[in-house]
Every structure is written in structure tokens, then in C-alpha cells.
Image 1 (tube, one colour):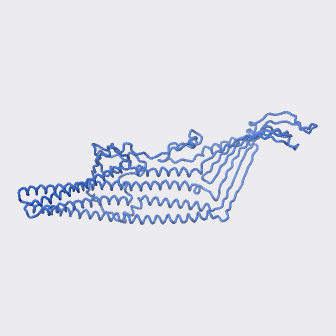
Image 2 (spheres, rainbow, N blue to C red):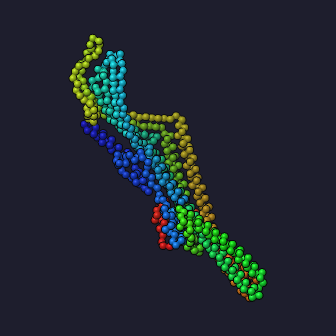
Image 3 (cartoon, rainbow, N blue to C red):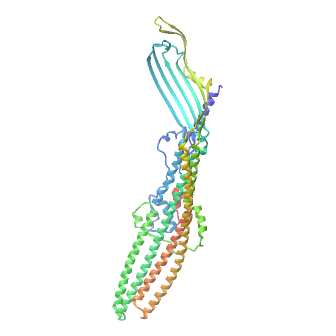
Amino acid sequence: MRGIGFRFALVFLLFSAATAPAQERDRYAPPDQTKGAWERFWGNNFGKQFAAPTVRLPENEDQNGIAPVVRNGKLALTPEEAVRLALFNNVDLQVERYGPYASYWGIEKSQAAFNPSHLLSTYFNRLNTPNSNLLAGGLNLEQKTGLFDYTFRKPYTTGTDLEVNFGSRRYDTTSQFIFLNPSVATNLSIMVRQRWLRGFGRSNNLVSTRIARNNLAMSEHEFVRRAMEIIANVENVYWDLVHSRELLKVRKQSLDLAKLTLEHNQARVEAGTLASLDVVQAEAEVATRVEQVVVAEYGWRNSSDQLKTLISAQENPELTSAEVEALAPIEPLPEAPLGAEEAIRITLKHRPEMSALELELANRGLELDRAKNKRLPGLDLIAGYSQNGLGGNFMETTLAADQTLRLLRTGRMVPGGLGDSLSQLFRGKFLGYTIRMDLTVPLGNSEARAELAQGLIAERQARGRIKSMAKRIGLEVRDACRQLEMNRQRVETARAAVRFTEKKLEGEELKYSVGTSTTRFVLEAQRDLAEARLLEIRARVDFLKSMVTRDRAMGLTLAKHRVEPADALLGNRCVCEFGTM
């Protein structure tokens, strides 16, 4: 038994060194959360637990915006470059990035139940009381009590609670019957409580942490969903800009044709071969087409501003005045048609909404398991062990009473104190053991049974949401595939219409040159050609936008642009690197 005190203290220190819970070593954890348990508990990091936490956040937007990309007053972009700029600079995407970082701290919060605690208590008390009892040791008793008590508590995920206590009590009195005065009593004890039914096991006690981890993954899937929406919006606005650019070109070409017809009419009127009414008709048409150019130019500038807003974080004069040049052609890319059923099969593996709902179902299952455990009775086994010591000034006393019945104490005093008490304590001479069992049986158990019923209903609801989402996604994908095929056919018919109207205009111009047609028919042929070209442009742009919609419906938007979700989530600058424009 001589070394038992030392071994007891060693066990205590080992438990103490392991008190700090393991931290997440991932992209969300701040640097000071990745240190060792001993350093976090006893080292330089101890005081930081009372300070404001260090919060790691995604990289902020480039303070220069997209100014480095603006060259010679122009911002020339392909769709891929617009997407990469949006991934780093889009303000809405920056806001969405904070969601997973906030969810990470939910994991930290869920681990708080297993944090250790230290309780230090000390006090000093002095009491002076009159006494009428001869056996109390004096007529007036003065007592001084000093206490130092330290308790360490640590719950574990297995359903185990550890409590280690060290106490020291100093007692000083004027009583004549106290042979150790002042006396110092010390106590070192350890108590372990193990739950065997309710609250037993890691699977039950880590439910909150597992739910928090699933919530973090769900927030990541939500970010991916929003990122795909924003990227699809950027692509659609880009193709709207391309449409506005081509619309403006067609309107300008139509205006040039009208001006050319006006010049020819003016020349023929001067030559006396044409009535002046034809000049007026041509001038009216020129004015109408000038208005169309003005409206088309307004639409082009408006689309340009919308795109700059989506791909930049800040407004600056250089960007505001820059002219956006969309480099992409509107020629639809040939691709093999994908069947709706095959597309749906691929979609269910890639849509983040389905992954999020699967995690929600997992959470409902975890909560259901916890509710099942809570309805069990409580059965706790408690085991305790203690070592005790006592020391102080020992008086070898002979007691007598004088004529006034006042006690007289004579003898030799042997000095002692805290050292004697600790020596007894760690030699393990005075030991104590405790074994106890607590059984708690709730009558009615209404709360636990109600939680279990609610858990069963919530799990059924989660399964129903998965089925409902799968049906909605299937409808969305089928609709997107049908739109894609419809717009493909629209492109073919629009091309044919353009060829026919071009031949019609050539014929009218030829007849007009030999005098067998009129200005009205030529201008109408020009308008028909312009409208046919606009319909073809609209069909091509709609086809490209329907590809964006199809990719978004299938959950392939990020993969199409070779963007990893982790890079998009962190806001890594590398996702914005692209070749020389």
C-alpha cells in the first residue's frame, strides 16, 4: 500500500491530460483548435477558452474587384471566365459561404457536454460562542475553520462520469478536549458513475455530435445548390448579353439596308424615275429602325451591367465604364441526345437536395434512437475510493479541574500539521471504498414516450420528403430535356426561315432594280429578314440556355465548369485563374 498514493495521483494526471475533446482538423477549424489535448488543457492555450474564439472564414472577395481583368477599357469574357469570376467575387455567393462555417461551430457546441470542469472552493470561518456544557471543553469556545477543496469532473461519451476530489480542512479551537489542535485533515477521493440503461454507450451520447456533423454536410450541400443556381444565373445573363449583342448587330444591319434603300430612292427621284412618296416611305422606315437600334443598345448595356454585377464584388469607375465583350459564339454545340430516364438516374446521384434529404433522414434516425434510449429506466453503478490523512499539533494532556470547575490541561505538545496529514494520505493508511447502485423508474414516462412518437412521425416525414423530391426532380429533368430538344428543332427551322427570307429579299431587290417591284415590298422583305434572323438568334440562345437549365436540373453545373465544391466553398483564388484573353 506504500505506493498507492503516488499511483493514485498519476492516474489523476492522466485523466486530466485527456480532458480536452478532440477537435475538428478540417478546413473550418481555426488554427488554435488543432493543438494537442495536454497543451489545450494545461499549456498556453488554457486562457483562450475564456476569450473570444478565433473564427476561420472563407477568403473575402478581391478588394480590387475585377479591375485586373479590364484591359484597355474592355472586359472580354468567355462563359467559363465569367463563371470563375463569379465564383470568387459574387456577393450572394460570399454570403452563402458563411453557412457551413457557422454550422461547424454547431459541432463544437455539441461537444460541450463532454467538457471537463474544475471547481475550486476555499473559505475561512471564525466563530466565538459561550458554552454552558462542562464537557464542551470550556466556557467560551473559539473555533477557526479553513477549507480548501478542489473537484475535477469529466463526463465521457461512454456514459461514464469521473469525479476526483482533493480537500484539506484546518480546524483550530480553544476546547480543552481536542488533542490535535490545530488539526489538518486531508482527503483524496475518486468516484466513477457508469450508466447502464438510459444514457449508456457512445452511440447514444454522441447523437448530438453526429447530428451536428450531418448539419454541417447539409449546409455544404445547400451551398452547392445555391452555387449552382448563381452560376446558372451568370450563364443565363451571359447568354442574354450575347443575345443583346447579336440583336444590336441585326438592328444595325437592318438600319444600313434601310439607309441604302433611301439613298437609292433619292437618286432615282433626282433622276425623275421614281415618285417622291417612295423617299418619304424610306425615310419613315429609317426612323423606325433607328428607334429599334436605340432600344437594342439599351438592352445590351442593361445586360452588360447585370453581368458585371454578378461577377464583381465592388463598384469602381474602371469597371463601370468598361465595355463588356462577350466572346462566345451562339452556334449550338452538337451533342448526342440524352434520354430522360438516363438523365434522371444521373441526376439522383448529383443533386445536392437529395444528399441533404438523405442526411436529414439520418438525423431523424439518430433522434429516434436517442428517444428509444430515453424511455428506458435509469440504472447507474457508482464506485468510489478515498484516502485520508490527519495531522496537527498533538498535546499529551492531563486534564484536571480547579475549585471553580474550570478545566486545566497540562502536558507536552508534539508539533505537526499539513505535512503529517499528507504523509498519511499518500501512504494509503486510511482507506475507504464505496459501491452503490441507483435505479430510477419513471412512472408514466409520458415525456419519453411522446418524444419517441414524435421521432417516428418525423422519420416517416423525412422518407416522404425524399420521395417527393425525387418526383419533382424527375419532372424537372424531363421538362429540361424536352425543352432542350424543342429548342434544337427551333434552331433548325429558324435557319431554314433565314435562308428563305434571304432569297426573298434578293428577289425583291432584283425586281426593284428592273422596276417590277416597289419600295414597300423591298422594305417588307428587309423587315422579314431581320425578324427571321432575330428568331434564329433567339432560338440559338434559348438552346444554349436550355443546356444551362438541363445541367442545373441534373446537378452537373459545377462539374461542367471543372469546379470542385471544396474550392468553391473556400473561395480559393485558384478557381478564378484562366488564360490570357
